[in-house]
Image (tube, rainbow, N blue to C red; front, side, top):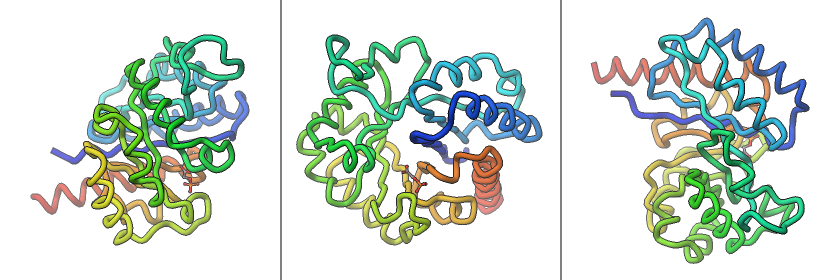
Length: 249
Ligand code: PGA
């Protein structure tokens, strides 16, 4: 059995709706020429307005029904820390119902930095996500490991999928050295259950192999925006699995 690998494509505030349609049409062509092991999972995280479009595509695309089809699920990039109600502009867990989401990104360093989100706000978002059965993908850089954990319940710490993303690696082309990622994982294990561990920060098809051994998946920003770049990453995951498989041989 191959280890399960989850690739999360975070499109951030990129792509108009026609651009998302264009991406899906191209990506579909690339998918049609490949087969995947069921242990490879892709998660698409478009901006809120594109969620219904991608959700409908996931329901209807024939290429996702074929044998050896890639398993793809959907994530929101953010969620309100409040329940449904009078919170103008916020997108609550209730608003996201019916879209067949599986995940929600929470605490991305861009949310912490540009939108001033505190650890407590992020903990509240995680509670909202869990109350709607969404899996929170909790993004953390070294300074947040403990301060974030202390404001979370034991349940939230056990159920969050933790993604380690050093600020210095996000969108900079300077991915974090694998030794540093291993050390971060060890530190994180003091505070979170880590059923799975995700690495993010300047991941590309060229360096993806460096992280598959030491993680259960990757959070990819810039290199997930073009269909061919995202597929190149998935191809590397397949190659890595085949090598690991023959090594076990
Ligand atoms: P990047 O972004 O791959 O462009 O570095 C990663 C992220 O911010 O999730």
